[in-house]
Length: 334
Image 1 (cartoon, rainbow, N blue to C red):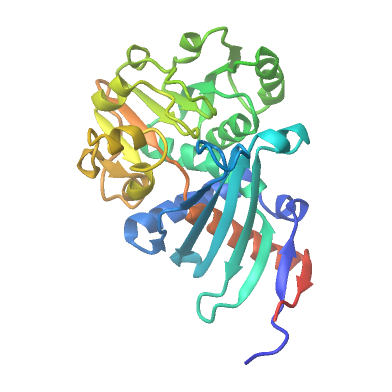
Image 2: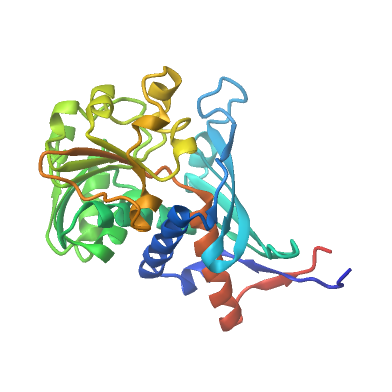
């Protein structure tokens, strides 16, 4: 057995110093292509409910275990991540909490352990941008965005890497959050940032992106017109069942996961939506196996709920760049 196998430890500042949103968008795109080609291996996430929806224990949170192997980087690992309100919110801590562990898939040595919150927020924005890349064959886009928090910002940053945002309409139940968002994002968005007073005012444009914790089905079927795509990627169903059932195409990132969590879960459990109703995965679009281009008379539902493979791929690139720069600490676990 080898002696003194060292694991690199990277904190959030280390990760931030070596990874940009441009990097993350490119990494996510390549990893989606791997999904389509079969070289990205990603089992469904396992969720530990710590009071997010379960009555016990009463901690208003959850944790996900998300393993994956990414072929184009020949790396593997697992993300342990979740979100908490309750005591965490009282302490002023971010909703997301996360660590990522990487291994050498040939021998199983742990090569790195790092913060995962920053990577989670960045790749969640990037996966939406990449999905839109395969849905819209144009450079300019109008966006309706629900949620003016950290995720709203990374969504905007990522979409701006691939599109010129002509108009972004932002809605948040906290009007002050929307005002601050508009100020923060004016340098990112090439066009106008408009603050919506009502949800209906924000539900306009080419793409409607929902990154909220709402338990209400607040997006109405009638708001989504032909030529539009809706991406409800918060933790709960954010749109009416009527739209889901009436969408011309349903595109997802991971079929097994989206059948059990997120916008499709309730209808799947009721037997009203099955795998046969899924038109394509984003991986199939990225690999050129199917066309995701929206037609002018189509309404598309796209659900990139998030996979460990995206976290592992971004973490692997961050690890390699950190090694080159001599960042991080070292610890010998064995």
